[in-house]
Image 1 (cartoon, rainbow, N blue to C red):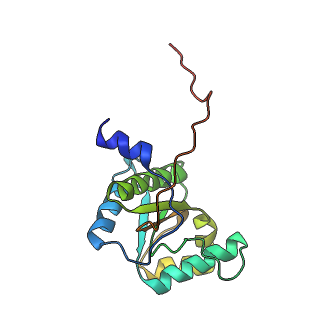
Image 2: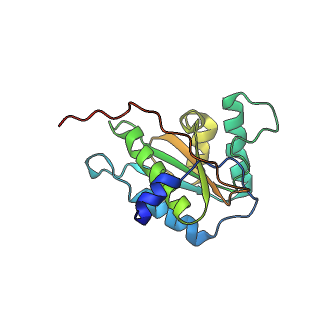
Length: 175
């Protein structure tokens, strides 16, 4: 089996991380993979917020916790030190698809580099708030964007999760 297929079949969502920040070079490669994702009509509508600043990471985590309705102290980013937020331009028919492809590419790239990742939802809700829009403005983001997902990244703590058995009856051939 080639390396690409191996990565596709062995990547798992990680929900426990060490506090060690991934190397910047690794994060840059992960981001590059996200930027090279396929996009509707080649529009490249996705943008990525690379959050390694602990204060902003914790602010995003707290917004996510509140939106999710969890008790105070719960970390919906599972201790991951880096958060790569994917947003896509509002008003295109490909917003969610473009952002989703960027997320998938980044999670596979993280795995290929020996890092853990997980897609965390509620980015749309977070960046539809005034606080979310203020964060975008403070980072120099212009235009209207919709949050697609938070790709949390870090070094896995412990063993990687084992794959679940694949459900049967999900392929229909038309030969």
